[in-house]
Amino acid sequence: MSEAVVVGAGVVGACCALALQQRGVAVTLVDRSAPGEACSFGNSGSFGVGLIAPHATPGTVRRIPQLWCGRDEPLALNLRHLPAIFSWGRRFIAASRRVDALAAARSALLSRAYDAWDELFDLAAAGDLIKSAGMIFAFSHEDGPQRIDWLVSLARRHGVVIERISGDEARRMNPSLGAINRPLAESFSYRCPRDLSYVCHRSGGMSQPGFPGPPSCGDYDLKRVLMP
Ligand SMILES: Cc1cc2nc3c(=O)[nH]c(=O)nc-3n(C[C@H](O)[C@H](O)[C@H](O)COP(=O)(O)OP(=O)(O)OC[C@H]3O[C@@H](n4cnc5c(N)ncnc54)[C@H](O)[C@@H]3O)c2cc1C
Image 1 (tube, rainbow, N blue to C red):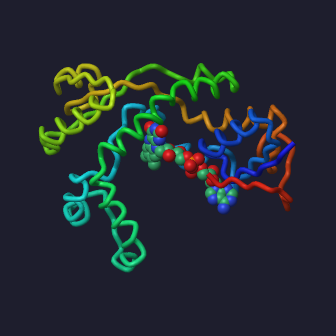
Image 2 (cartoon, rainbow, N blue to C red):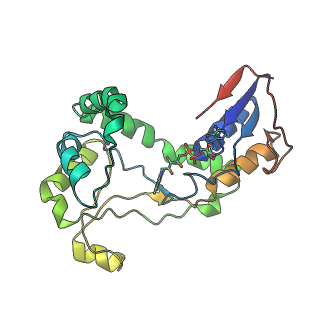
């Protein structure tokens, strides 16, 4: 039987470990802390299957100065790091000219996401964690109707079903909102990576102390190490 160590028991590592195990690989899942405690713990828990717009778009590139310099804007750039991120930045700008190709690639991947998750949640008997609650995207007036039209038409071109509703309707659906919105998705609980790594252990996978399953910290003599 071939063997593999997967480093990192977040949602990506847990899924990789399970998928390898399903293919007959003896898996060891390691992490420097408990499974599912890092980024996979604190997200909003939704399957963003409609999120096919890439981050690199002409609009994002145009807004970089504003995103960087504006008050309360999300982009933090330390000038000392500029040389290091120069080549990444060039690729980001080049990618912004291929929005449709990138959206098509994301759409092809994401359209299979529900089936892939179903398979893993069946294994984990964790289907009760999934809620079909829909997804609302709210835009403030500052986003401008052009940007919203652009996003909606990009998504529709790539097969995403979007219903546009008014700000008032959005507020009725979710009174804590103050804007406008759209697509549909499902959501999952943050417990998911932990449940998936438990399944990996139940099925004979190894882990480190602190995880469920037999401890296996130390040296590994393995042909494959996966760092998702
Ligand atoms: C605010 C927020 C909201 C989000 N909302 C969503 C959402 O709704 N839907 C969605 O799909 N995604 C969402 N995301 C993104 C999603 O959470 C991440 O893409 C995902 O959790 C990444 O999983 P991961 O397994 O790659 O990383 P992590 O969950 O961070 O796992 C990496 C693991 O590797 C371990 N590790 C790192 N280095 C080492 C090392 N050297 N040795 C041993 N272990 C190591 C860490 O301890 C950690 O457990 C959101 C992210 C954020 C920040």
